Length: 100
Image 1 (cartoon, rainbow, N blue to C red):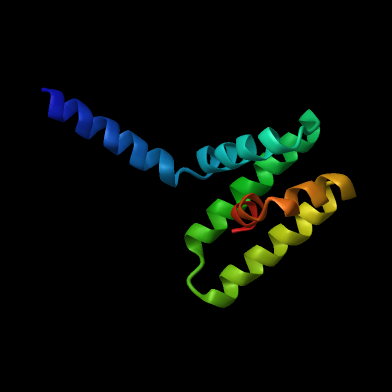
Image 2 (tube, rainbow, N blue to C red):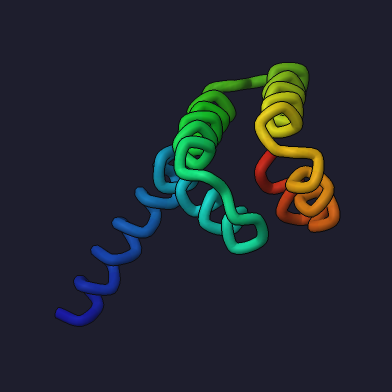
């Protein structure tokens, strides 16, 4: 019985790990640990990050993937204040994770 429960939990975890909204919320949580954001900006970023994951799940070429990365870079640059952006870019791993 224990192994069935563990297997079911693995399946739930696997499904979550592919769910665009779950992934977006996880990434946003990492961001707000570093940079406090207003609620309206958080909501906008959830939508943007969800879009990223939905789109990246569908793209088939490097060119398409790179276009998504460029859109994300541009949107993040526009959404954050210069101070927030500077702080975010100083955490290269977090910045790359939000874009890709």
